[in-house]
Length: 149
View: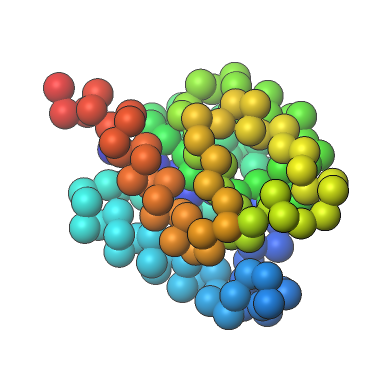
C-alpha cells in the first residue's frame, strides 16, 4: 500500500513551537518514526509538508495521479479554514485520516471546526506523534486489502 503523510503549516516547527502542547520531538523524528513503522508493516510512505494552502492542494491532487491509496493528513491551522483542501480530498476520493497531535477538541473554540473532517474516513486527536502510526494502521486495515488481491 502506498500512503502519503501530509502535514500543514508549522508542523516543520515541531520541537520548537509550543512544546507544552506539541512535545519536544522534531519533524524529522516524526518522519523517522512513521517510516520505521511503515517499513515494519510493508507500507510505502511518502512525506510532504507545506506552510502554503495551494501546495497542499497540489500534493493531494498529485497523490491521486501517483496512485497513492491513502493519506494521513494533519492540515494544522488549515483544518479550521480551508474549503479548498476539503474539496481536494473529496475530489480525489483518496481515503484520508485526519490527525492532530494535540486534543483539539479541548482547545480554543475556533479549533472545534474541521472542514477536512467532512471528507475524512477517521479522525485521530490527542495521541501525540503516535497518532500518525495509528492512522497508517487504520488505512492498511480498512483500505489496504485491494492490493492483496
